[in-house]
Length: 323
Image (cartoon, rainbow, N blue to C red):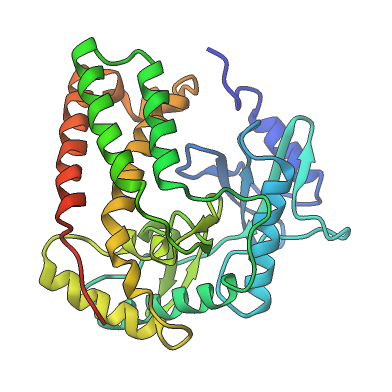
């Protein structure tokens, strides 16, 4: 089966890096990534790098470059992010044959521990500083998060795949339409956001953290970069964690408490979009290998039940709080 990365052989990978005078001391180590192909390497000077090879035909050059320029803007403001390396011609997006790639500094460390108040406060500080800068301008090329339209498009993509039985398709269509109809009433204020801000994309030690992987940065409500970081085990813990995050955040800008009502709509959006993403990437052999349950009818039964449960959360949100 053909797929976008079938020609990214180890030899071609090494040749691409060497074309930028980056000389690995051994074969690069593949990191856990599905959308792109990402590798960690050490060069002859002992410096560690992360090389990202972009999925062909996903983002345009302008979209990728805007991500890179955003990262450079943040780095210039001393906000800890992994900004791409630029060559002597000040280029951060590189080409080797049919592949586009970028080189980033390797960021050591671990994710914040959410039972540590100092970590939560530092996380809030980081996000507040990020949004204080990102709110100054708008993206011109990157996507815009559109709740209703995004859910409808993703739902149609899943239905068109033919992976569900007729009965499942009827139930799925009904629940996705209910979600989309509910999301239609939300018209949030949008700023430039990381977009995929979960704990795996925050790395550091003690109370100093760096944001990595802005591959999904987009125009979105500020709360998009907050809600995935806080677990939903119980409301008391959630409120305590939110208190620490918001206190750190407000050192740079007002925390968007008015956007807490968007958390369940954003969760619904992500649930629908995630299954559509898996379907759209099924021709890449990495996906059936990593997500074999998608081919099982039981997965779709469980997914439909999850979406039906989420409809209830849209009607009665769990995690509403004020300042």
